[in-house]
Image 1 (cartoon, rainbow, N blue to C red):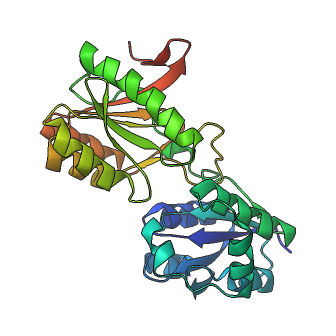
Image 2 (cartoon, rainbow, N blue to C red):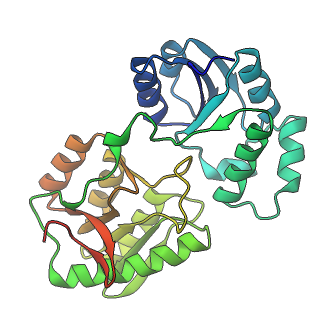
Length: 280
């Protein structure tokens, strides 16, 4: 029952890999569970103990963690949300939990899984435990700054983003001229950007904010090069992200791509009047 072991429940992307590396630097043995067709197989080589599961095999995850004396675990990485309709293979534990969840939204599912783990003596820790440096910085990050009109759109999008977050629908909204062009739902941020950006005609403003009461144990908003690639495809103009409440992956590459395309990126903070810029 060593606290020196840390469990990872991994989805896709580089977050599980970065966490595993950081945990090992911190002196933790890594016990990781990867989801087939989602998790980067590199994680297996970074782990001291590793197991593959299919989406929904909660019982297998708990059994593996208990066999390896895991008492703390983290949710890391992405799961393609549309797979809940086509590629779920629940075991008895997973099926029992699924049937108890009334509303199949992100937070409802993840909180239920976290509770099931904690009932088995496995505490779920914050995903940023060893990676505070990945939190999105405040201020204008790019050479290009948002115009005053674009700041109005950021404030408008911020209010809409908070509402869809409160309803646990998504974390991203695309706007132009105080008009909602797209709201992120199960399809994810990139698809929302492509939908809304196609309507925005080079003036689309993308706003990504935390949900009210965001639980840092899972599902933090995240930005990476793929986000910027989607914006470039539709020639979107501005990306505004809530500073300190979202993750920034491959930051140097994100800024290089944005500067090359003339996209403004800004990390905003909440103020009494709405989102503000610490760089102003």
